Image (tube, rainbow, N blue to C red; front, side, top):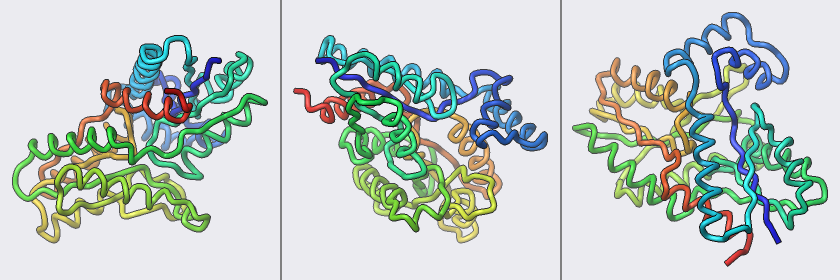
Amino acid sequence: MTTGVLLMAHGTPAAPSEIAPFYTRIRRGSPPTPEQLADLEGRYAAIGGVSPLALRTAAQVDAVRAELEARAPGRYVVAFGAKHTDPLIEESAILLGGAGLERVIGLVLTPHGSSLGSQEYLDRAEAALGPTPFVPVAPWYAHPSLVALLAARVQDAGRAVTGRTKVIFTAHSLPQRIRETGDTYAEQLAESARLVATAAGLDEWIVAWQSAGRTPEPWLGPDVRDVVRQLAVDGLADAVVICPIGFVADHLEVLYDLDIEVAGVAAASGLGYARTASLNDDPAFIAALADLIIATDGAP
């Protein structure tokens, strides 16, 4: 029998003209104000007009498809669905559900799990599949190959700066109310940072959050910008290395929020700045994703 694989990611505008409808969808039908839209368009303009995420994700999907076909010819049918752009998760799930597959494995392209993050993707996929059995891949931040890849990147980035260097691991912030539901997202980030830091040979490291939403409710902190400022005020570092451990590809939250905003904070504070290279379609990362899918499938 054939197994379906549904890879899922956030999605991103593919052209400047798509920024307004994209953020209207994210805001559940509420269009951004002219001021908000101008700010968003300015951020995209600063990184080249659009985010490379769509191309990076497409390359990841193509590479996973090829890797699975090489390992188990004819066994896997790989599709992609996005949370906010076409093809939507539901559209791809419906197609897989009508293909007569034995089961569908769902893999969200983020290593940590959260009720307000990856679980929403998985729930939407399962609801759209109908009677086809759905098998989600559990949070995979502790996969040995992923840990090794990130540890090597931390070491490489550390060589790009000099002096006393602090390594800061970041992920996308979420509203603090997730802590009231037993959500372990924050604990997962702390554990994955520990695993990567240990593998990289670090004696100390910092966990921080980034890219919090602009809403009145409190979000998980501390914010990485505040952490960088405080390191400078306290005289504890000459440089920072940022490892966005919650992300697996280049996109706005990495290229703008870190490489422009946080790098600017570091420069204004008199600190050097380096960031770990994104995983994108690194063959070793793709092999790790294939490992996860095959292990979840129970295939040899």
